[in-house]
Image (cartoon, rainbow, N blue to C red):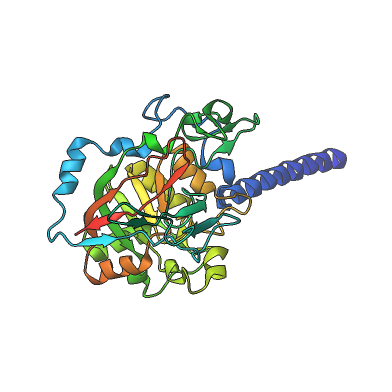
Length: 338
C-alpha cells in the first residue's frame, strides 16, 4: 500500500511540475515582446492591391480624396518640410553626398552677349541622403528559403540589376496629395523625445485630441514631430546614434488605418533601438516591405515646431518623388499648406 501511494504521489508531482513549466513558458511568451518575423506571417504577399501592384499606399490617393484634401487649406500659407542638401548634413552609415561646381564659371563666355554659366557635379546615394523618400525597392526581407523579397513579394533576382530596378522603381508611384495631420510630440510631452522612446497609439490619440483634429482616415498622411531633428547639425553623432519613433503597435494602427505615407524628423521614423532585442529595423520592414507604406525621413523639425506654434495640425500635403527610373528612393521637399 505504501509503495502504491508513493508511486501515485510521484506521478501527481510529475504532472504538477509539467503543468507549471508549460504555464511558465506560456506566460513568458505572452509577456515577451514580439520578435522579428513574428510581426508578419511567413508569406506576407500578395499585397491587398493585387499581385502585380508596385504603388502600395499611394493607391489610397484617389481623385475623390485629392479633391477632399484640396478643400483643407484656409490661408494658403506654405511650410516647406525638406532640408537643404549640404556637404555637412548627417549621413547614415557610410553613405556619401558631395556637391562641386567644377570651375567658376563652368562655361563661356559665348556669343556677342558673352553668356557664362555654372553647373554642379553631385556624387551621392541620391535617394537615401538628406530629406529622403523610401520607395518600394528600398528595404526587403530574406526569407527562411534564402530568397530576398521586397514589397509585394517581388524577388531581387527578377526585379533589377546594378543599373536600376526593373520592378518597384520610384517612378511607378506618382505624387502624394493628401490630408496631412501633424503629430506634435514635443507639444504633448513638453520636451524633445529621447533616443529609444516609443511613440504609442495612445500618444497619437492624445496629440490629435490636444490639437482638435479629426481622427486619421484611409489616404491621410502623418507628419511626425519628435524634436530629435533639432540635433541635425548641432550634434551629428547623437543624431545618428538612435532616435525616438513609432513601435510595432503604432505601425499596426497606421497600417490598419491605411495611411498614404509617414513623414518625420528622424532618419528612420521608427524607434531606434527598436523594441525587439533581436530585430533590425523590423518596423521598417513591417511598414514598407509588408504593408507598402512609404516614408519621408529627415524632415525639418524647425518647420514642424513653427507649424505647431501657428496651430497648423491639419493641412494639405503635397509630395512628388523625383522620377529616377529604377531608383529605390528620391530626394524631395514635402509641402504643407495651411
